[in-house]
Image 1 (spheres, rainbow, N blue to C red):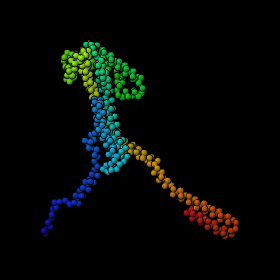
Image 2: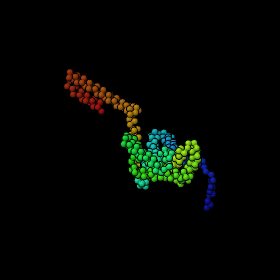
Image 3: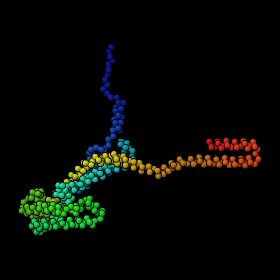
Length: 389
């Protein structure tokens, strides 16, 4: 038997095209993609963590890096308030939930983890820093860097004179810090413990002076080589070039004594590099703390805080507002009015029947026959039963 010829159509019908479009739309609705969840957009949420991390190294840049993260936070909250996935459905409840989620999971807890790591790094580093915390090293270096500006005249001529001047100034700083620790109120104490201002008062004074003594040896060696016209190995080429450029001008304008300010610039630059090393250690500690606590933070916010605390709290708040709203009281009044009407009508009927019963009893007692006495109570009892029914 000859089989019929089959024609293979090389075109697609209009109905099949529409069906495919509908199918794609359903797929899009089923697989919702948050427009703010792409990696190149979501990267803005991590700029505040980077800013918190490098705050010790570059404070101004660290503050500026909070701006993209705050902008992303505002856009995300507005989007979740306005849209329910791909449907336009404004909801204050979604907006509040997003504020709490982003505020806790994106700002508060990650920044707190970084700060915690930075603060814990300072005492832990005692193992590697001759029993001296990072905060104490920072405070010592910063004080020496500021004291360099006071070194004028013949202080640089003798090593012992230079070191005695700097160490005496440091001892005065330690004593002043200890006095502040004893006289400050509780709020100042908490703030200064948090930012490390009491580091010189807490640490061993002998260890602080020992660290400062080694640091001053390096400074005196640097200034000696500079005066001999030799570039010190411990400073950068840029610092040395700036010294060579400024020293002739300062000598010509202010004399030899004020020319020491050019040497002071080189020494302060060296101290700044030492300070930067300690800040890098704290930055590393903050990053390690963030990586360790990142998963626990996400689990706490997603599994505990939002479903078990925030959502029930918002529902209870909404119910409390609804209970005290004008609409709720109006609905209650409308429900209670028919019941009150029925109760009044029933009581009126019952009182009327009682009045009729009393009248009939008086008539019966006055001039009714014995047959009427037996028949009328039966009729009255039947009427009462009908009313009760």
